[in-house]
Length: 226
Image 1: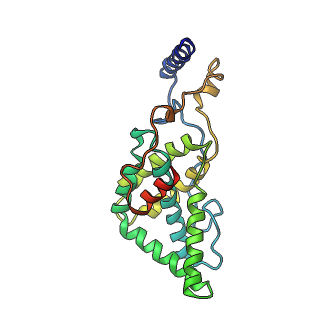
Image 2 (image 1 turned 90 degrees about the vertical axis):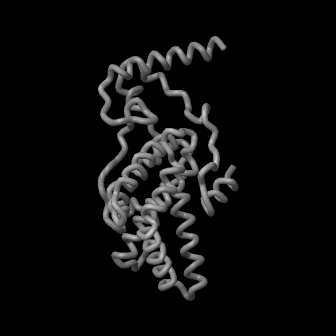
Image 3 (image 1 turned 120 degrees about the horizontal axis):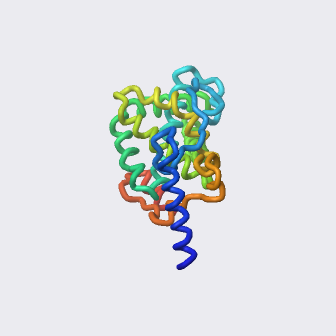
């Protein structure tokens, strides 16, 4: 107990110091956000995910949008340790708000795989495999905190966009979401002398993940992963 009390005291002292350090962003899970790579991408950029050989411009745009959906879906599953992020609620709201644009992206990708496969059944199988791989590419163990921070911010932006503009969110933020998958630390602990040896306590210590609020396929995925 003495050691735990001492650690808590050290971290409270670190927090007090953080209040005196100018913030460069409105942090949620960090005192000072890590330096994630930012910048818009164009359809077909390698940072987006698996390539689609022979895809036309509409299909490449659909793949970019679907990558954003996949990333936000993974966030809804992995980021429930912090209720403040509202990962599940915001994800479900995005599915409702941008349902038509997402449905168009899905049918466009489905048509691509069917066109490039030997038959319709093979095309659906290849689409399912690509879809599964897209989701898996957003899974990160050691970069979870940074990814959840960015994904929550992206989800909030997506909800402020009018219907039909989710693609613009994907184009502007997918690079940052990919960058956030890499392990990252709070810049406060590396930039402020004397705090380099300190690290925040893990948020998962206080909030266990749950599947509350998920629906359909996302709920089944969550239950199977527990």
